[in-house]
Image 1 (cartoon, rainbow, N blue to C red):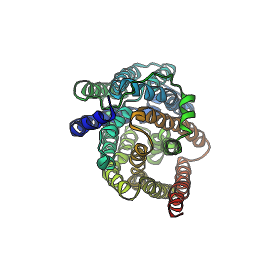
Image 2: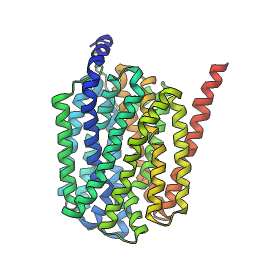
Image 3: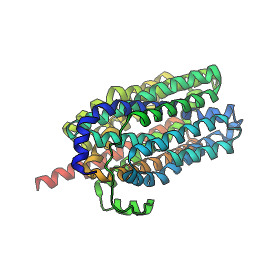
Image 4: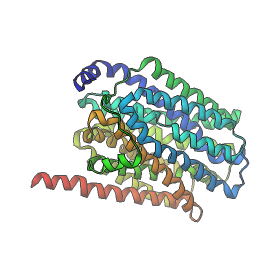
Length: 412
């Protein structure tokens, strides 16, 4: 398939395929947030892990999935350049549906650990859908389109925790995993029967792909390397608190029962609401004023707002700060994703998304481990403050190296 044919086909197909990709990402994210944020309580209630060991096992079960995904993502991304993103989405979607079902039947923490490892190895549904969307969107709609795709993530993030909290309360926590498995099956089936592959396939010799080789090649693309670093840092900051948040809400409410689970679902959903409200707006601002410039603005303000966590005393104050924080952080990912299309060739987009996903997943490894370690000797509120300081530092670095630096080069 030539680049010319690919582009011509996209002009007539992106409007038809984008809604299906949006629905697939929505259902996948809803499945994730319906189940995974509540793993610490699942460990306590269903797998009977002792209270003093919950933070340790929660961090481990989060981290192993991200580790498996980080190692495999570059391989899946490179393979997608040869066989197409659609096949990668199908592989990942049905594989994830199976692992969610198996999570629901686990009887001890070691079975859960094994399933979570497999989950990380087969993951990649959302990146594949994002890559298909970015490859099909015309340049003049890129910022808007990637912002719209981010609202699918946000919408799933809203519905998932709410459904998970109430399903757990009404039918037990295992029901959430079964429903999540069904949603993933439906999302993948929609891709199978409706979506056409819009990836540029590399018809040349299939070179061996591995993490070290792809990272070595990435070193020659400073723009891609920067984007990988930003994904890593943002994901690390997001995941610092996620394994602790349900327990933290319980502490604020002085209750570890069903009410704490429901309230945790509401708070997890806030990030999805803010994503719907803010992601398209920040995507358009990035297209107008520059993706990196807007990324610097939103990450710095989000980090600054997180510093106010130190003053909270009630769960409602915590929820309010999370909401405002999310309004700005929602602009980070769509602007990084849109900028990725500027620094990579279309026929290498699968490998680029694989490397970026790998960097993001390594952030998912580091975040829970660091968060669990920090949470073992300090309050969760100070873990949030630490994450805010990191975001502010990253924003400052990005501004002075990639915004002001570029302006100075252009002036000279």
